[in-house]
Length: 252
Length: 358
Image (cartoon, rainbow over all chains, first blue to last red; front, side):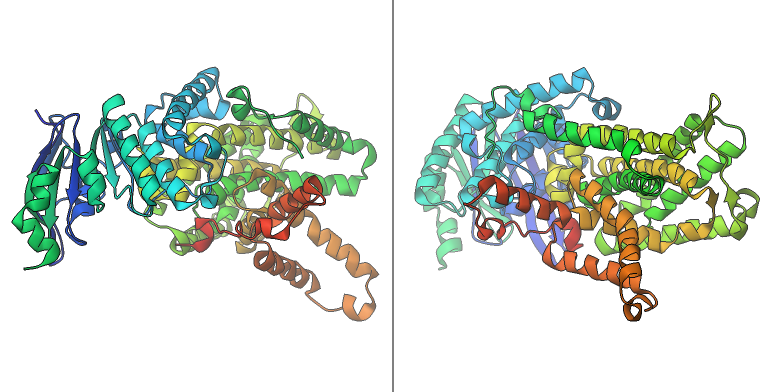
């Protein structure tokens, strides 16, 4: 059984068919990339998986469970974490607090315990903090721990967003253009960290990415899309040389 | 300058984070607890008023400053707290019980208001809460059997075990104690998952939702808490007024409450206290200054609200982070003297999402 399965997934906004009956499946443990020109529907697929949009047709299932109509806030609890194309961090908060919010789904305490700050809340805070420090160590964010997001450079924000997603301890991680806005060195680091996340932590990764070097370096399989339709799925080399893909990018 | 050496995660969790806190907040506590010894009766009353305002401000700050929802109708919760408290006292309830019930009842009304409010943000929410406040005001006027309408309603004295708490000194301590308890409760919320969920909702709803935060639940909780604290302030306010009438809880009161948190500094608890001092004491200072001004100036009608408004506007233009923002800059100037650069704060002239009204 695949970790994530999409069957005939479709969504249209009025007359615009953003995604048209796309079917694919992602196996546990792989890095799966989605490539395609602008407006191909890549981010829309992410928004369908994380239930920000309601699909107009088709079915999505995650480890055997139908998630086509689960509530948006319940997706994280199933073990799906994501980042956003233009970073959606909590701007006025410190890096530490952003990462602690990533731990929110592991919360066991109730509100009345929180308001009294009972010993169980304190224990939970310490446990969260330890989990957060592991992620900080993994992604080398020590220097930024107590800084406000609004004061950080873009490349660091990108990493903080990935770190926050890792704090959920997800089974599946959705990365929306992780390398956009990063310089070549940072992109190299990212490829290295992706490997760590995938192999050391055993997290399945789906990413939308334009940097074909990164895609080739990091991913096991690639899905190419154009105009909301699936072109092909295969190894990075196969996809890069597929005639349909070449036509979508370069024209006739 | 103070460099905090962190050796333990608890250091980031504890309320008292370093020795400087112990010293300065200790001195402040000593000052406020000894105030009845050296402050005259009139000023003691004014400070009691400031404390009551601060409790209401805490509630509003949770909603506006931390959850990013604007309310222009908090006078309604103040009124609900005051009237429920006075009504129950009149029916022979002991006053701590009646105060608790008034707080809980306001919180319940706040939670109910949250249901329609969940669908709105920014200016639309502000207008909706304003409408709610107007409805409550009309109910106070027309439900004469309970509220006494325009004639008003006398507030029975707060007496417990034969001790009359309306004595200025005792009432000062009662308000101070309730403010301190409220402060600790709010700080507890803010350093636990519930509070973090609120700030997450403020900064990015999409992102908060995909982190597994229940938007509706978080907003309802914020509304209920906010209304609860304001209701508690209302119950205390009733004793200060001693006679309740609808004209004490108008739109002007709501705006005053909102300006308190904005001028104090959105998104900080220091801001609540600064804002309460500002709103509570400034009218008195203006009145005193008016007495010593030349007659030509002093006799201008409506001078007080005008000066009040002018100071507010200047704050909003030149110090969007409020009195607390200014205070941080002054403190940093002395800490870093002579190395302070004005440009340090250039970048931090950011706005909370609440202020942008989306």
